[in-house]
Image (tube, rainbow over all chains, first blue to last red; front, top):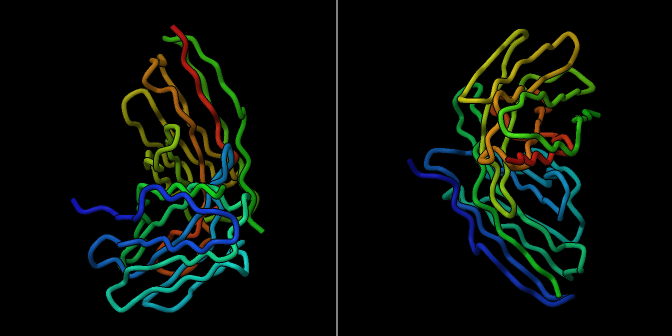
Length: 113
Length: 114
């Protein structure tokens, strides 16, 4: 079965650079969630989109922005990168079926040097 | 604000022994999830618990939910080395038709020794 696809899987950036992470949800899933997991930490909810509109917002820094496109894929844009942004970034998607569980992608490991 | 707390945070077990990980959450939640994570890897869904008294089992792992006590447990039976990983519980923030905005516990790092 198709899963949530994230790209790239690994990314190395320098401080103050910009990074773009991509998420391709499971087909027919209309909701996308982004999480950040720092080293040794639990995943923290950043932001979610339902039908291309932002549906909820968590602890997402102002330097980050995200959007969901017409084909339901989502991109997380991160600017003015800081060392503390180094983390695993997970995307999850869920379907419009009542009570649907979200499924997580493999994650993108971002390292800021 | 929903808060989720796990204990213990570190668990060192001998193979063949039993143990339980506890997960408390602070406010009403529609669902309780258990995930397994290997180092640097994604979150593997183990169980989704939907209602009070729910019990699910898969192999050596069994999860239960008591919504009145706001407590979930993950019981490990006759541990084997392959179970070594970090285990997270998570609760959703309720509402809507889909459930993906989760609050996670701190995680329990499980190490199983011969």
